[in-house]
Amino acid sequence: MSATSSSAAPLRFGTPGDQPIIRIGTRGSKLAVAQTSIVAEDLARLTGREFEIIKVTTHGDVNRASLSTLGGQGVFATELREALLDGEVDIAVHSLKDLPTAPAPGLQLAAHPAREDARDAVVARDGLDFADLPHGAKVGTGSPRRRAQIRRVRPDLELRDIRGNVDTRIGFVTDGELDAVFLATAGLNRVGRTEVITGFLELEDFPTAPGQGALAIETREGWDLEGLRGLDDAATRAAADAERAILNGLDAGCQAPVGIHADVRDGVLTVLARVYGKDALAEARGEVAIDLEPVYEQSLGYARGEVAKQDYVPARLAAELVDSLFAQGAGDFIGE
Ligand SMILES: NCc1[nH]cc(CCC(=O)O)c1CC(=O)O
Image (cartoon, rainbow, N blue to C red; front, top):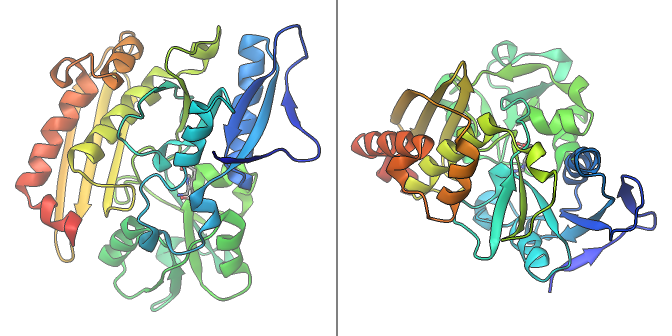
């Protein structure tokens, strides 16, 4: 049984009708509730139904240990998935980057809304951009990927392992303890804190975590809702599938020192993947023309194991890149 709680004033969206309210599960953090509210508003508009947000407390929220010691894998997703399977909620909204790549039996990834900005943001004192940080500045991040990327370009910076929600991390800078922290731009935008951003880490040098900036709408397998597909963005889905197929192919979790970013522009899927070792780097990039129309149906079949890797363009490109990364020693870096 997962811990669910509803606040005094229920969070409802849409107009009450004859049909039952649809319950949307989410983590209780400000970011989770903010992004789930955006989804609920869109769903109300697309389906004409009424929705209520149910907060589910997850292991990742209760345990305040550093994510690197927690191990990462699914700490935020497991209880939400249990609530879905138990029928306590009908829909779960996840940050895609926190969702394990292994398929969850009995559940389906029903939609990926259009992705937000995938870049990491710099939040620094005095409006400083990354390049302006003085020699030896104290910077905080709990992410092994961000640590590796920063170490490569600015070995002079003093790295501190921090974690906590968006407000906590911004607080390290505003209270003067650190010179800068790094957060997902998407999260800052969704909670309405865009104004704290003092710079961006561009994806070319700082490819982010697979799925960063994207959301996943999960439901019980076979559960369908008229209009739900209207929320799905084919380009986001293709990019997300490619990124997650690489993570899965590397046998790496969301805490691995891996940066992967894919996007679709003008009918071309471009994927960049980097695996960071102590002193070395494995990099692979690829491009392929993609027809987004069939991606939706194919992607659902691919998730169920009914569409083979070699028949699904994003997965095929991902498999090629994984081979190349392993040939460059990525397997050793992941274990380091
Ligand atoms: N690991 C926590 C987490 N999960 C999703 C986001 C941001 C929103 C997103 O990437 O969609 C964050 C915070 C962060 O990394 O700054």
